[in-house]
Image (cartoon, rainbow, N blue to C red; front, top):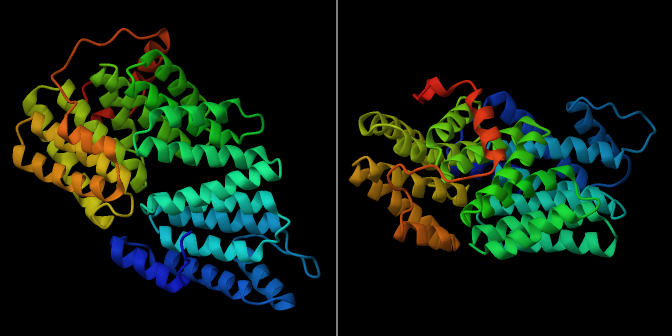
Length: 394
């Protein structure tokens, strides 16, 4: 497990180490909430109730006098706060806030506590702390098994499946994600993520029919704008892998014109660069890819040279290096590859190291024969707006 930092120190490290610029009002609100929660975790009785009521009021939730603070309301407000922090790459602060929440939540609230620990697993993964992430997910898995809470089991298997995919163990990742889809009581979020990750695994095995089926399910069943953005990026990646770079470029373009958080922008920039290399004449591709490369360079640098989001940073750098090499930008390609290799070696991303040694980007090829579901995806992507904003072909 990761030792939580005091909220002020966690905020300082996130802000200084990662170079993230945050509105002063947002920063003050976050620190006020975090401090209230920390103080509540160190007190008992009426003082704790008073502090928690103030925290809920700060986030628009009225706690009635002489009534016990609802554990569900408190957990909902704090996890929403932590999600906002996570979206801005303030992973350490989010971890500290959720650690304080666990000190306040009663031991009897196993489902709520398990959900929080699962988020801890994801935050540890974002920070590149893979052993800690595994321990968090194993704890969630234990709670789910011992207390017959399938939602927690599904959340644990989803997180462990993503970690297996990161280290290149696709058989294990597929086993876990299929288990989530077969699990009665798994959260819709876990099922949506599993469809998306099974698409990635199937595409890696060149099983595009299966990949298209999972991609379409994930996109159509997206319950939030965040899930829709992730699913759309996965759809674009599938189209690229299946030999439809023009449609892929349009899909990535529709992602890039959104107000993206870092973990969504990274794969979209890498994928868009590869799609442009395959879809456009070299002069047009070079100009577009150089633009994408500049945006990616600034983003990775702002994330402490990718250490805050090591896998998506390294993956995007690998793709960018291939795209730059394809259009003759050898020096910049070499620099991107070197940065990717440092991250891959440090965090055990073996499949990325292998890809650096065996580049996959080649000249445009004849599209592969795929199922009718892929044709439906292409038709849907063709209706998306925003492609012209990044120079995609009409």
